[in-house]
Amino acid sequence: MAHPLSVYYGPDHAEEPANLTSEAEVRELFAVLRGMYPEGSVALLTAYLADDPWGAELTAGINGDRGVLRYSGDEQGDAGFYSKSPTPTNAAPVVYYFYTADREFPPHSEVPLSAVEAAVLDFMATGVRPASVEWQEARRTNA
Image (cartoon, rainbow, N blue to C red; front, side, top):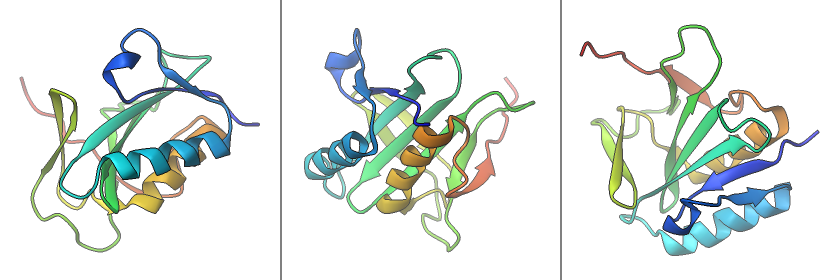
């Protein structure tokens, strides 16, 4: 059973997210965003389960033909998880933006954009951390 997603990816979503209810709608959104954000023009979207907006969160970054993921959910001790490329990619941290807000992603977190799209579809299908990509744990910092 697919879980409808509430997705934030533009300033007009501050009040009302885009609601995606099917695989086709997710694929259509990625097609639009690929056109809007060619390589070097990075962007983020954040997806929540529509019936649990305070639950798990999946953030997906887009940068041409590659992207990043961050998952935060209900797993014990969960400081979050970042995508991890099975082959070395970005050697240094990279920054992706949601308009004026930025988020840093750790080394080797960039994966093919097709893997990012597949992870969002996996999240929609299962409602939990996608198993379709490898993950690395977020490092906690001492404040």
